[in-house]
Image 1: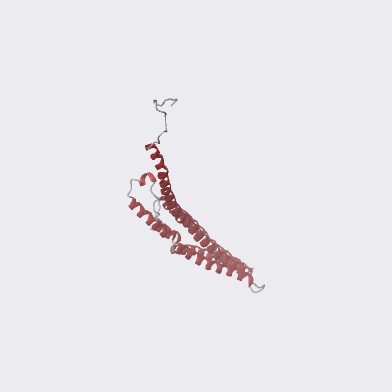
Image 2 (image 1 turned 135 degrees about the horizontal axis):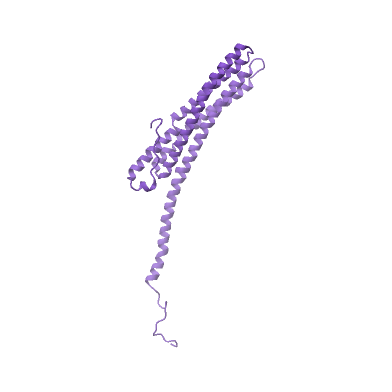
Length: 251
């Protein structure tokens, strides 16, 4: 699927009756697989890391500006202003990139939910669940979060007055915070997708099959319960019903 193209939404229920069911199911399986790959595929993970890298680059320029300002001379202030402008020029496009990625992710999630609710297909459900994708996001995010926490707390713990400046401490703590927030985003996305897939395909398919089984069992019990009534209507016991005219009251 191209970068800017999204699959169409599922056809409405009143139009689905006129379409070939096998074709609709094939399209549903293909679109679900493509949407799942776009949401939790390796490319999406690399995109998240690329956005984090751009944020880290912009924050590095901000950190250089903070360290330059600590020189307390006009030339240092000039370099600090230049570094701050460059950092802002990197961070602003990163924010726009992140907002567009979040909007695209929302559209993909909406289409995935719509196609998942359109029909029931265990084979397509297995492709969408893909627990190894959620596990990949989970493990990489845990490693990235551990690295971010180590950078943050190590920079604060190893700071010594006169040896490490406030600008350096601020830079390393901000860099660790960027890594930590990126890890939290990855963990949240992996957990949300796994929870949604279990709710949409795991319990949903079992619920549908259970409902069908319960309906068939209920139909059988209904048929069995109706059988005596039909038999009683066909064979009326003697002495039941209205009295015959020939029967004498005193007999």
